[in-house]
Image (tube, helix red, strand yellow):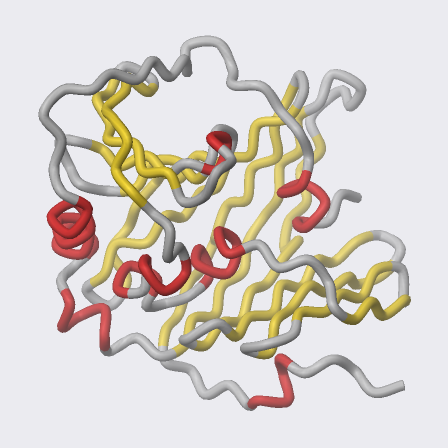
Length: 234
């Protein structure tokens, strides 16, 4: 099956009905946009109480070459502790793959092989961080508001995070929530957990199809040991 890391790295074109057409009208400042996002999620006080996040869920892969779509129940688990520590576990028919950062270096285990100094994706690390809404500038220090756009019929504000336009973030102009990470990762099904809104679905569009991660449960402030995020010893 397809590991999260590989899916996040896959190239994909925006799907029909999701065209993004930017324009330069009156834009909010970055600080105001981020503060509104924090307010929409639940407010600084509620977010700052979250120290760890543990979640598990299903994976639905819908590709032209896979008929019917593949549904994997109890397919993944995530463990995260702010700031910057995370472990993503993906169960497959052939074994268990892992993708992690210990707060500094990142590592992976795929097909039983350990890879140190693995690729670091700040969007992935941010998505898992329970205090991510408060740490946007830490994860994306070069972010800047660059325009407004229409995304699936909704007006959004676009924020570039680096020189690659495909990495831009899109915030709903009406609700203030983050709707998309880059051009092919859609966040939806926001639900309240411990006073904070959390997206329970992450859909990643791919060439001709998609992979959708659906959380069945998310819990906060469970005790997580440092050793959980360290690479296995060999």
